[in-house]
Length: 338
Image (cartoon, rainbow, N blue to C red; front, top):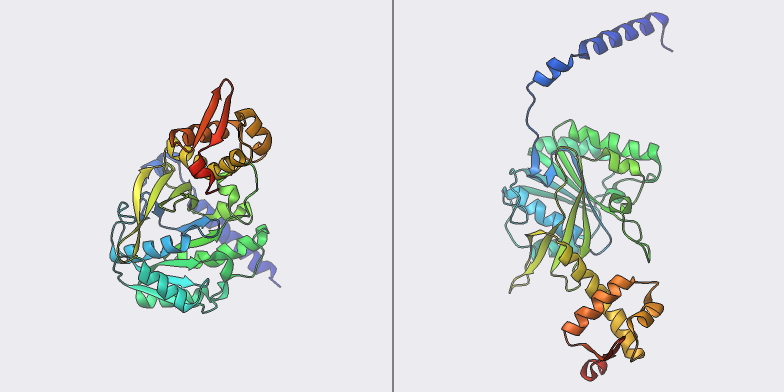
């Protein structure tokens, strides 16, 4: 038990500490502070970042590609400047064969990139990780995934606090962190809602310096859409596309392809809706737009139905026998494939 004398001493020292920390606004505004630093310019700041997505949306592939590029000091996704760093990738998601296969599939060389594979790394090992980082001059640690390195409740604010108290040990040593994380199971209907899709307590988001999310994958798997949902030190980047490029040797690379436009979003929605609309018209020849809505309206809205029908008409997949109202029929050669 703390003695009265020790308590008085502790309170006095704390008072002195707080008084010494007070500064005037004028002095604070004139203070020379170091510039903000980035792991990848404008994309990943120094500090703690999460890359989240639904399952099967290339997040591990993309994180491995970033690990390779950062370890070489190359442009991330062929676009974002990086500072060359020694990187530790902590793999707690897949076996060595799968991990080696993915690394061989991803194009490009690598620098000082170190791995642990299913070593059972947990939060309790952070001090060991810190020691390894100091020995090998590692300044970026990637965890795949956050869920695998703890046994706490991600929906409990107190447990989330414990997770990030452990991570702070790395941050205090100027070691940045990038982790993968999962989205909640998507609702069957209704709009997605940004960072609220990420699994676990909202306190996870509060602790981050940056949250990146793979929002969706093109139907033909030629690109993904990346969203920067949170960034402390700058304005959020506009949503952008990253092409998935496969060369003749089946090597995969990820290439920045600019802003994700409203038209891009419409085309993805049309592609998602086309199969359902085609099946409906094939099963019920001669339907009007309103009748199609009665059948599929609980799954897609009237605007989406209209856009999809127009797209299918332009592609000569469906046609109309009447115009007012339009009645839709599927082309015979397409109908045989449905």
